[in-house]
Amino acid sequence: MTDQDPNQDSSQDSNSQDSNSQDLSGPDLSQDPSPDHTAETRPTSAPGLGGSASEQLERMLAAAGMGAEAEVPEGFRSGFVTFVGRPNVGKSTLVNQILGQKISIVSDKPQTTRHQIRGVLSRPESQIVFVDTPGIHRPRTLMGERLNDTATSSLEGIDVACLLIEATAAMGPGDRYIAERMPKNSVLVLNKTDAATAERIMSQLSKAASFEFAEYFPISAKTGDGVDALVEYLVSRLPEGPRWYPEGEVTDAPEPFRVAELVREQLLAVTREELPHSIATRVSEWEWPRIRVEIIVERDSQKGIVIGKGGSVLKEVGIRVRRQLPPGAFIELHVTVDKDWQSKAQSLERLGY
Ligand SMILES: Nc1nc2c(ncn2[C@@H]2O[C@H](COP(=O)(O)OP(=O)(O)OP(=O)(O)O)[C@@H](O)[C@H]2O)c(=O)[nH]1
Ligand SMILES: [Mg+2]
Image 1 (cartoon, rainbow, N blue to C red):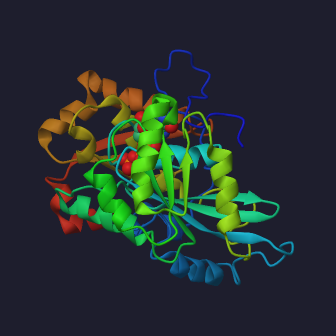
Image 2 (tube, helix red, strand yellow; image 1 turned 30 degrees about the vertical axis):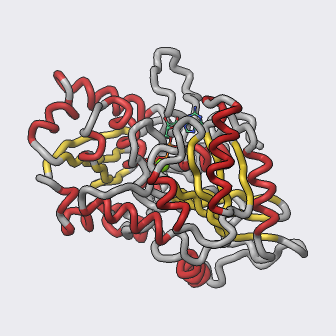
């Protein structure tokens, strides 16, 4: 397991109030992003890759000449594991905990994740590609419908599906709706056990048992409690197969996408109520070290909130994001209004949803 809490702020700044900040490790951000991976060409279901897992594999194979590295030890296991569940249950936190770094942004606001985000766990004898997904919810906008589609399509062609529910709230109709639609042999993950009583955990597990999951894992994505056992079990469920991603690759998310997500994460941390849903971000220019990020809101009144008094909100967001990037990064934030973008197909396409 990892020796750090990936959901804690690893920055040295003791003044920081931001529990979601940390170093953005991974590929060298000072490199020019691949032209295939610009924000403009991002497909709807995933940053950099779209479609079902098997389609993605085919594309990966084609892109790499043959894709998967041929040399793996005998008995090597590999495959895709998807995390689905209602918004806010901790899917992204769990992916980050397993990978030991921030792969997917996290916030206490529902519907933070808007794409399928892949995190790759490579070990000498196995490779698991974890797929983080948007929370499944009752949609109120076209974007909400797209998010649900993105989440449910992640269940196609994968090896193991995990339903996450939280121990801190009773298993509600939303959880049951998803539970009834899970593929056979899915796994139930009861998260946030650190914040629940033993009685509550037992009662949640016994309620979930009526859905006949293959296995039940009480865990805390926050502390890492129970996560090793879950990962070991998931490895045992994988078929023998090749290494789909090179060993050092932890995510396939393109760099502009990751920076835009970091900006959105910090905006989620500093803004309130319904505003988070109204915010989208995209990198509009990338000329290292200068990165221009467009922040899109739905109404003129929201523009002022995002900018803040004398630009204070944008300034704070810029500082928090820069802290997570390699030294020298220069973030330019611009706010634009795209009226009711969440309900307009054209706007959603432009934003990659
Ligand atoms: N106490 C506790 N809080 C947790 C745990 N896991 C996640 N959280 C918190 O729950 C909130 C939601 O976490 P996320 O990981 O963003 O949840 P998500 O399921 O990815 O949410 P969406 O992307 O909106 O679907 C955050 O405030 C997390 O810090 C846990 O194990 N224990
Ligand atoms: Mg999430």
